[in-house]
Length: 87
Image (cartoon, rainbow, N blue to C red; front, side, top):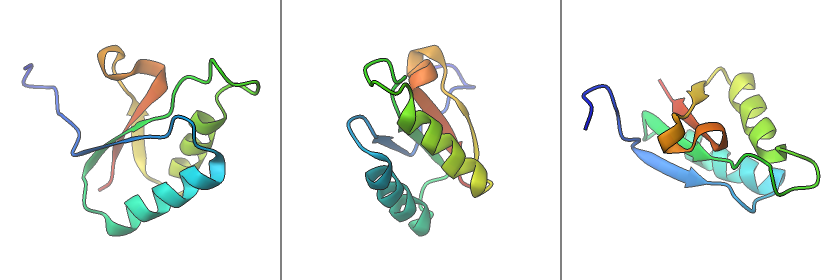
């Protein structure tokens, strides 16, 4: 393993969830603040009629709460996943 790669402490997959379900899961995840590095798998939105609804929602959710994140590397999900750092 590359010394600069860091495995997330927790991975949550939001495929097939709606915005309300995603909000409940994220609220409970961030309320306990147990994991410094979380990978949130959102999908790219290629299969939905409205594009990347969950991906867009999760980014807004994180931005509103000043939670630091970036897009995952290609091998970790690329555009379909976010690396979140709860400081």
